[in-house]
Image 1: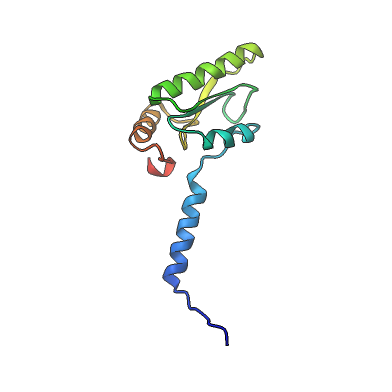
Image 2: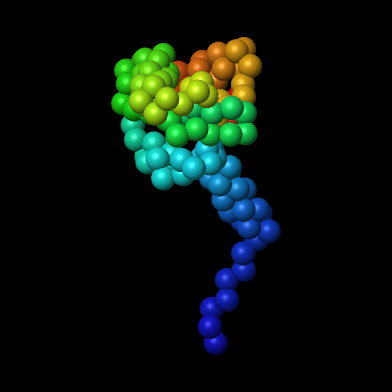
Length: 131
C-alpha cells in the first residue's frame, strides 16, 4: 500500500500565500515593451525604466539604466536614454518613469514617487506592496 502523506490546511495556505506573493511582486510590463522590460527585471540594481507615452498609451521610445551606484543616477539615465530615442524618432509624447527596481511608478504623484525612491534605496527588492 502506498504511503499517503497528509498535508495540513496550514501548509496548503502557506504555499498558496507564497505563490501569490511571488506572482504579485513583479510590476507589469508597459504594452509593447514586454521583452525589453523582462530583460530589465533581470538586470542588477540600481535600475530604472522610462517610456515615452501618454497615460494609457506608449510611444516608440524607452530607456533603461541598470547597475547604477545611486538611485537618482538610474532615474536620470533612464530618462535621458528615453529622451535620446524620442528625439531620434521625433516622438512628441514625453518620457516618464515606468519603474524603479521592481516598483511600478507609473502615474504616481511626486510625493508617492519620493516614497518609492526612499523604499527602493532602503530595500532594492522592494515592490509596490512595500509602499
